[in-house]
Image 1 (cartoon, helix red, strand yellow):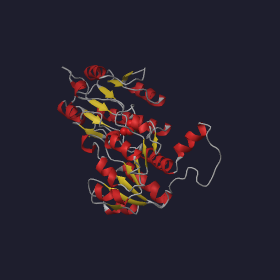
Image 2 (spheres, helix red, strand yellow):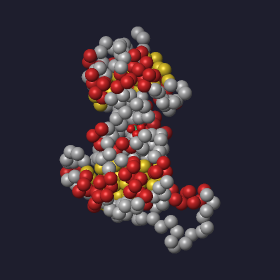
Image 3 (cartoon, helix red, strand yellow):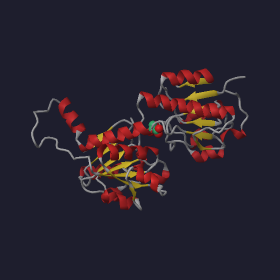
Image 4 (tube, protein in one colour):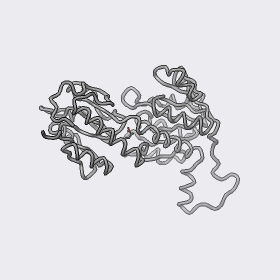
Length: 336
Ligand code: DGY
């Protein structure tokens, strides 16, 4: 029996590519550049499965195909706001993601960025590399203490909870949470956390605010000018979630006029483009979307993609179903 065909949009860790090639008839995008809408249209017309990543845009243009072949989009990554779910729903395409395996590493990075901006690690590194360090002095690059401060966590899913664990048990921070639904008391109790009634109620209480909510239209510009003005004037904002959650123009203004203490961003509204106003802000730490970028996690994400594909093509419901009917409507090309 022929193997299902799979298009993979970016290079993946070698072990993942090898395992995927064992079970499937795979085409890799060898040049590792982002694929265009036309290329995705082609992929959806010609492959049984497509494996995209968060750097792709799979919007309505990609689904404008007379005879669509793809039955499953097995995303490599937990976020899926780059996939038009209204279109996948209409075309009965199953969508999966890779949760859990990246929660720890993303929280590690958020913690690191919080420390970096508070302790002025970016300023210090820039100074050293520019050969501008003329020795220590009591007033040199003085930052803000992190231990024991109040951390607001926006979105208390898996990554938010890992962030709470690190901040509370590692740094003695007091945790306040904003989450759309009510968080069970026993979950809050694990981290000595309390839940704020609203985001507006949370912001003025926090020394640090770390975003861990999903992206997508419902959270677009959740942190806008008004919300930034609710933060304490010396508080810090950390975003390792999705770029669209923060209005970058409003953030650049807040940083330039020092209405907040600083910010750290691992994600941006128009990746890989960086708003030139942000690049001018010294009280900002920026990283190029490294949340899940460890060998262990990037491999585990790939293995989770394969698990989802294997289940789907065996006729079972994939473990990480995001949307769609699962395998039940399809003629399955292969049993794994
Ligand atoms: C994710 O998994 O969504 C991370 O942001 C990596 O893209």
